[in-house]
Length: 331
Image 1 (cartoon, rainbow, N blue to C red):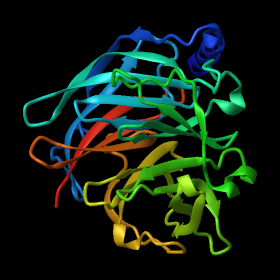
Image 2: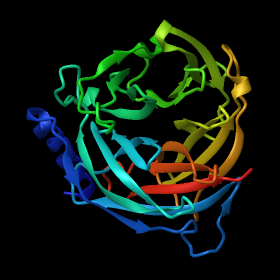
Image 3: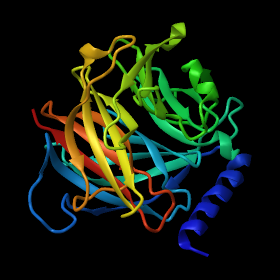
């Protein structure tokens, strides 16, 4: 049996085994340095970004991997969710200038339902995005069984997704959308509205469909995003300016390689019915270090610089890696 298939089966079995207990468990993570240029070339610039650091993350925990959503919080804690229904919490280690130096041991656990028991059904545990609501908790979006759920912030301030979860309003049109066209990108705007895009839900003009609105009022309005070169949205994060960094990915079936594009969506364009016009920040493709990047997060550095974090989904495949990259937005 191929290693890829074995890892996936083990991960699936582990989810089922956690049904009896939602208690988080410690996990040891090894972070091996990776360069921007996989072919050994020099340079740290790619588009409007400067490469700060990158790591290949591995762990002996069989459920480690498959990460599709990422939050990096003040103080350096990262929180990720996987498409097999797991969450990961770990401490990032930084140099004095904010450059990422590694990752400390963390915890993993199962994403939980409204009764605080782990979500074990395959159609319900495919988490694709996580978004922090400062001072309140976290939103997690799922595809296949499309929904957004809310997890309250733990009393001691430590992130935890052990539940119980609560239903959270999401665009009604998602209910009847194909199972693999879920809400891959969710960003919290400064005014409290949410911006979200389905992975590959399109208008008759072939634009990607998204929504912007006030979820507390159930007020969701369409926005659209032009499609270019088969890139599809997989993550989003809001900058201190209120603009949004959109992560898009393209997979070449012939070469079996991924390409990743980061674009900027300007806050002044966030209006109901708007056709957003993205501006490219950077294109990451071979021979640059890249994989199936599905998650993006933003956190200002100690000098106020904007630091962007990318995390890849290895699909529990021996042919892919879990990469954590740190890049700086260069104005």
